[in-house]
Length: 131
Image (cartoon, rainbow, N blue to C red):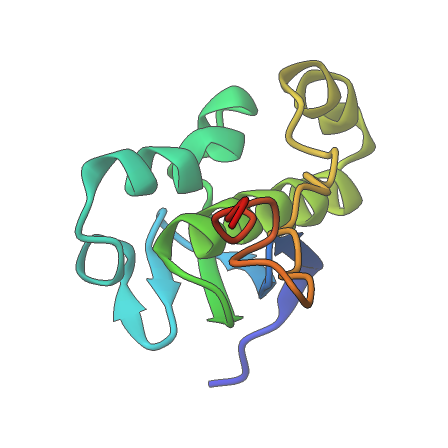
């Protein structure tokens, strides 16, 4: 059986990148070959992932296949949400208004600040010694 992708979206958050494929189905979400419940053990991360589907009332309309890499669980969940929102907006233009209002189409640009030389961390300095 040949499965046809209805829409594709790429999501990014921190250093995580997610490729999201929308297919016809009954609401199954697969992340890296596992169910979303198995991949995201934390219910809060699972909630973050499903937000675009609940906003557009399409929880049981599509099967979602996600490939995600990089970052940690929180960044990966955010990347999946961003990619899913992009895929839903490319599938149906009428979804854009509700997804934009919820802030799911905006790429969260916050990144970890790099460590600077001569310092203990990005902001922390070594202890000052007067003598």
